[in-house]
Image (cartoon, each protein chain N blue to C red):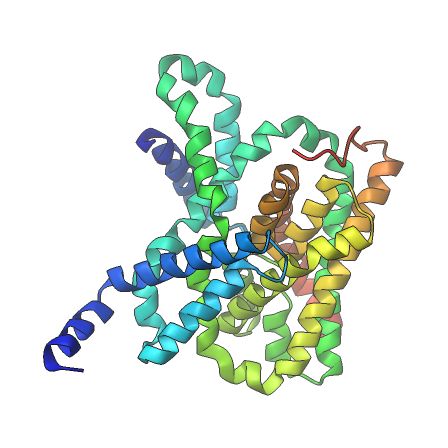
Amino acid sequence: MTDSAFSLWVYLSQTPLLWLVVTLGAYVIADRISLAFKRHPLCNPVLIAVVAVALVLWATGTSYPIYFEGAKFVHFLLGPATVALAIPLYENRHIVLRSIVPMMVALVVGSVTAIVSAVAIAQLFGMPDPILVSLAPKSVTAPVGMGITEALGGDPSLTAILIMLTGVTGSIMVTPLMNALRMKDWRARGFAVGLASHGIGTARAFQVNSLAGTFAGIAMGLNALVTALLLPFVLRLLLD
Amino acid sequence: MIISLTVILLCQLLGEVVAGGLGWPMPGPVLGMLFLLVFLSLRGRIATSVPELGKTLDSTGKGLLAHLSLLFIPASVGVVQRLDVLAEYGIGLAVALVVSTFVTLVVTVVTFVVVSRLSGSSIETPEQER
């Protein structure tokens, strides 16, 4: 690189603009790829975009905190988008109210299953307790999951990553799995993916069906609450 | 659109204040969702005095939700920071995540459908595409 090109790079790489553009660009490309493959589960836009951005960071030797300075503007919108889940929820309020009983039972059963299955399998692999604690809230939306882990002595940044990987895993799995099980109830399909895979699962559910997306959003919110309440007790039983 | 965005952000702010103030284990935005729900149920009355709001709230909110996937990218890229742990426990973590997610999806969907049938709350045309 010449001196002037280098100084331009030094300037740009420190401004939010560059990494904001990289994030949006990666998403636009990933979304196009996902559309070109007719929203095939394996062409998950989050996964493709994350790999693309990670490669750019690696190739340019950029650290994550510098990247996040720009990307935080996108990250911020997660909050208002979560609030906006109330809009489809309100539109479907009659169906939601009629489904209260199955929702509540599936919520408690699913929430406990998500914690116990993950921790039990990791125990078989002989993982140390701090990793088990960090893994336990993997199905919960990131801000809550990280808070839980921190309170219980795990590693919040590891939790954030495991949460993201769980989200992508569930989004890839849900459509073929539900089709194989011949589940045709969009409420149940959406609720399951929202519970198991929080917001990333909810994003996938909205791609497939708006009623499924609505129930996924409800499951995400309720599971955050239930896991925060149940996890300390479940974990105490499992780790002793 | 600005007025709709203001309402949404105000709901989030209320959610953060209540969650933080009471020390609830709920994220602020999830409580904000409840506040917006209350707002929507009162909207009929509000819309008569602020007609602009009635029209744009739905489009603003759905605009945010249309690209929900995008909003997860910045946090997800954080995976680059912890590749060391993933390398050390990678196989165990991968098995735990994949099997646990699979089991959770199956258990949840089956519970929902079975209880739905038992409690008589199945919907008429569940397979109908919207």
